[in-house]
Length: 223
Image 1: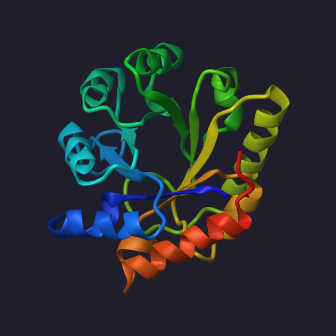
Image 2 (image 1 turned 90 degrees about the vertical axis):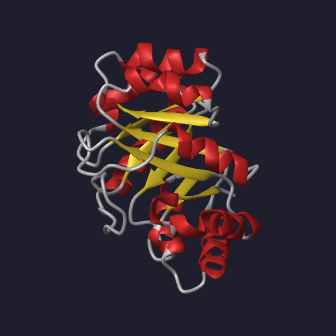
């Protein structure tokens, strides 16, 4: 079985508590918070206060995905509100090894993310240090985009590298995840599916969340 992480980027913020409770009751394993600074990506979203608010709503772990330039400036702020994971981008961080170790020293699990066109090889030397690797399957910045097919090869490559290195990180995939794309992503080796529009823009959030969770049970290989 794999894990399901609904992304509140697509939620109705005026009904956030209600909608988080719905996904919590229908198979969500984590809550994904997309942090965007308007520089690394062309959008501006949430800060540490949102992570703190989500934690007051749910007991589910929070997965904070920092799509920001110079993430070292942000890590301390987010670590203070204690998400389970803080994930930063390889493309945005000059001293990535230092940043990953800083996240872990502050008591959070550390993740590294790569954009669709960034090769998996660029993070090889960190794979025994991180707790999570996030493969972006769309170009980050906005919800509702279509899955980029070649990212399946990256998931497969990363899964092979994990096995070869006897590493233990989770493989998370974010972008264009829905009931059509989820099976192939899971079969490629993903452990965590991030889904926004497919859940929160559905006619029934409960049914959409439950359907994706069933796919994680059916196609997820688990770790």
